[in-house]
Length: 239
Image 1 (cartoon, rainbow, N blue to C red):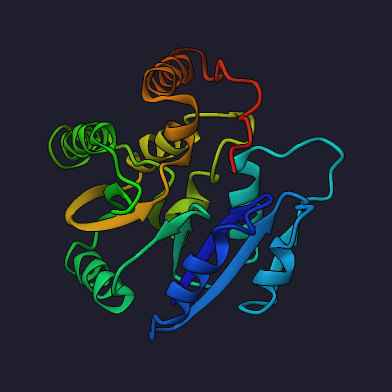
Image 2: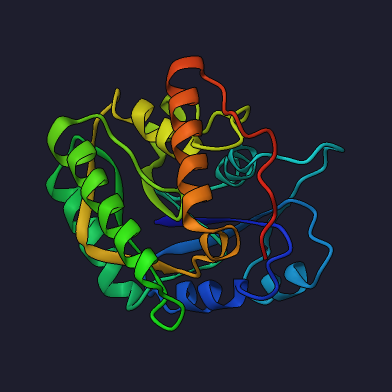
């Protein structure tokens, strides 16, 4: 069984696309929404697809790691699939059928990620260049040198392994996705599956520009690797 976990915060513009997509997956599944106290119609929309909704209750704004962990705590599936709210998957049955086959053929495998691209009608040349390079980078990390890494748009993880490493580091505001996969690699193998693709809006890069976003990614990754803290103190909401 797959537990789909999607963090949300004011995602009324995009959330239905991924929910309607997941709904077409015919295998055993549950959809879990971990909401950071949305003030728009996000919760009204998600209630049409699932009743498994966790709402952040603390006065402080939650990190993305907190949101994902909150969803994982109530998950009952053997696999946890973490997705961003603005993502989309073509042919979910073929997509997850292929991933489940790879996991079953590699018993020591605990995590997988895939190619990431921007939706065709929104994609720029810069998007193509950056995500092509990111794909090669993740292929080398996971499939060759064994360091492990995966962008937060999509991560599929065995729940047992996720629990074993303690889930996401909730203190990290940025680069928590790669940090998790590095720890995940200590309990098993991870794989980058290049032939499978998850699409997303590319909204952050399109809003602040690739130079600034790439710099933010790299600085946070280095900070987390060497100091266990992210430089970014609050991830700015882009909708």
